[in-house]
Length: 272
Image (cartoon, rainbow, N blue to C red; front, top):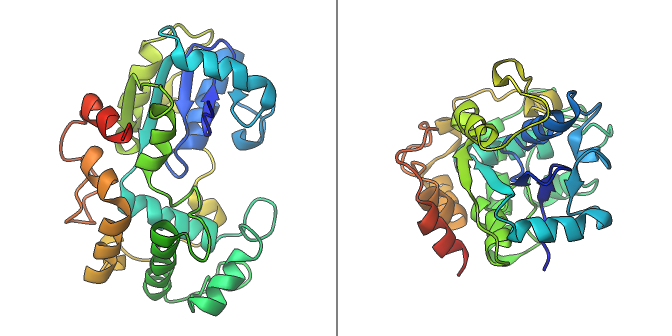
């Protein structure tokens, strides 16, 4: 069975289902540190050693075995949908990527031509109407998620529930899912459940690959980007994310969860 988006420590103690734009770089680096005593030199997404990934063919049988093993601790991390889609816009659409080019090469020119968005010029640093362009990008994201047109939804704005479901529908079960908004508490609970070769002090762990490094700085409060139509589009795309992970759909300014997650409910829903 395929398990896309899975990273795992070489000891097979910890298995992580990646959610793009939800601290995945920091989590990957922490997992790497637990076994090597140092952070990966570079972007952890580029690592081809020191951590198992489903994208690496030699890792696949090990990951498949670990999914079914009660000895492997399985977890993921989720993020407020309003914050996550904004981060995707500023990083992947407006930002210049670490390669020096635009994300997916032809995507930004397509959006400029067909959805009339602006991205802050060639370097992403010029002033532009962020609210107007973001709302137009949101229409594009809705088109990809609802109708897979003009392309399939990108991993950076496809729903969190869809990401996590790839593990559950293939027989896996999460031991924990925590909120990026309470990152240190959630990550510490994961580390407390396993014996690591190298202890991690989360208070001094840097945050890796943050969006503001790649794209323009957000100029307005989160709520200003979402009018009634935008909130309706968010509900169309992410209603399961709001419901399962207990985020506030009605108030884009409230980034914090409103209640505890129910893992049994999450697994029941994602297994459908």
